[in-house]
Image (cartoon, rainbow, N blue to C red; front, side, top):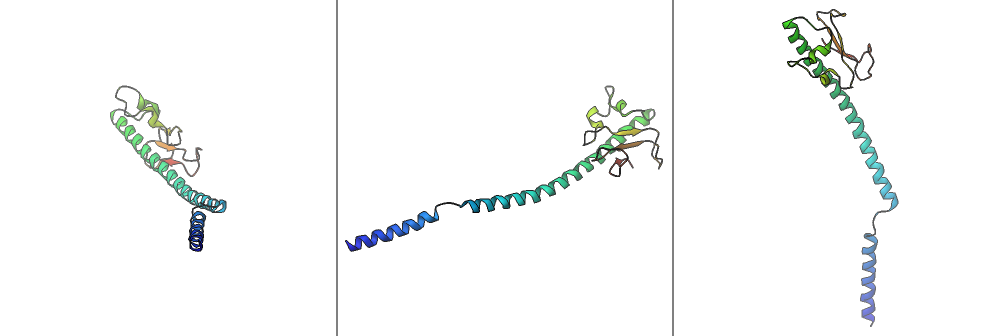
Length: 142
């Protein structure tokens, strides 16, 4: 009988250790994990936003080049148009109306003849990320 009790006691002690280990995580441990996930997500988010802004600026420069090419093709046939909307009219229009908006959904600013000089026949600009004309973040043809 003594041997049986000793075996039972060892079994129960071993079983209690397994139960203690399989209990799960405490509230404090879960809170620490959530805090770490939040810190990592914030760091990644800040980096991604910077890349998204740069990507929009690069896309805007590419759009300005495309519109400039369409303007130059039109000017080869006749003269530069007075408005960008003329590039979207007709069956042989080189651009679609949605291509005349920058990545911030603002209309491009087009002036013909150029008011800035510098060898350009026309001025073609986007208001940039702040959506205000005449600020240093404006993106213009070169």
